[in-house]
Structure formats: structure tokens, C-alpha cells
Image (cartoon, rainbow, N blue to C red; front, side, top):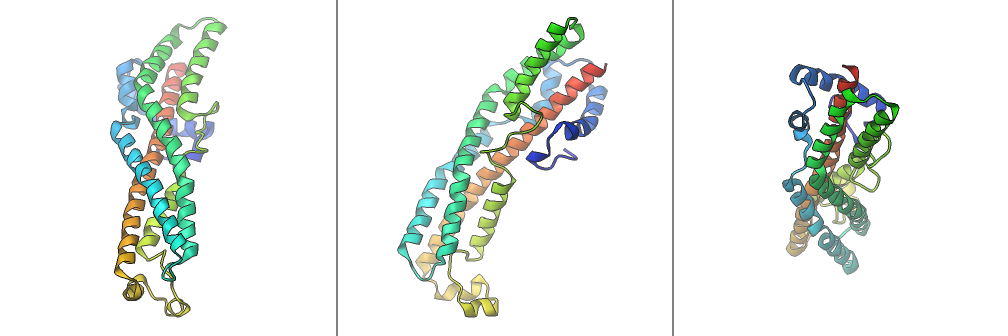
Length: 254
């Protein structure tokens, strides 16, 4: 996608702009909207079992990671920075529900994607033969239902609320980077004045607490993989809607 770079970018205007390039490809390659050629254009946006597995693994480690951070907070060890531990817990908790909902969405799309291809192809092939207003209205309603299913919205926009979006991607990215820099450990005022990095304060942190932080960081990295994959799934569904939109424009303009 050339102009749509985040989930909120999809709307009727941006779809029309994005469709220009897709339409050019369709016109060069296709003579009719068969199930096979529609599937070929959509295949790059299809969801795979591997996507589900990555998201499921992230969910599997999320709650134990939050529980471990809660234990660190409860221990009140002066070597830790409680404010940052709390922020880590809040961030991961925020991600948890959205990632679970995204998993269910991804599973639904995986189970329905072949049916969507065949169903849309059937409606598209009927378009040149529609004569009455009732027939055209019925076809339009059928296509609208497919868009609503894919985008979770009655408009040409992706309803990403309660799902993984750019904010969650940035949140876990920042957490991974922060943990690598000793985010949950306390920096003294002197450390701050000297602009000491994590390497400079490691010597005063017990080895088992350093290891604990490394373990939590590794788990958060797994969460990040799942969040990134869920976001990619969402963007692929936006891409899929653009292909369908372009096929419709192609047929209507012929």
C-alpha cells in the first residue's frame, strides 16, 4: 500500500487513491473475476496458521509475565524502580485484552477467507447481468456484508477499537528497548547526573535479579512478536478490502 500506512488511514477517499495501482494490475492480468484470479490477487493478504500460532504464543506468556512483574513490585526491593515496574504491568495489561480479541478475529478470518473469495467472486460475476434495481440492491447488500465482516465496520474503514493498533505496537517496542536499558532498576540521582547507562549500574544489582529481568525481557519480546503479527494481520485485512474494492470498480467501469 502506497498511501495507507496505518489502520485509521482507510476511508473512501484513500481507498479510491490506492485502487488506481491495483486496478491497473487487474486490467493487465484479468478478463473476468473468477474465483481463481480473485484468490490470486488476495493471496498476499491471506491469514495462515503460522499467524495464529505466533499470537497464541504471545498470549500464553502474557499473564505469567504480568504476574512476575506484580511479584517484583510486591517485593519492594530498593534495587527496583517501582514506578517503571507499575508502568510495565499497566502496558502489558492494556495489550492483553486487545491481543485476545485480535486472536479471535484472526481465527474467524482464517476460517472464512476461502468462503469470502468464492462468495465475492459469485457476486462480482453477477454484476454484468443485473437488470432491476432490486437485483442491484441485493448484490450491493451482499458485497457490503463481506466488507463489514472483513473490516468490522459498516463503512469503508477498519474498526480497530479493542484490537491491536499502532499504539500497542509502539508500547511493546518501547518496553523491549527499555528493559534492555535496565528500565525496572533504580537509578540514583548521581546516576542521572552522570547520565550513567545500564552497564554502569549493573555491578550493584544482584545476579539473580539481573537474570530475572532478562527472563521478563525475553517474555516481553515474545509478546512483541505476537502484537506485531496481530497488527500485520489487521493491515492485511485492510489490503484485502482494497483489492475487493478495486475489483468492484473494475467491473462497474467496464
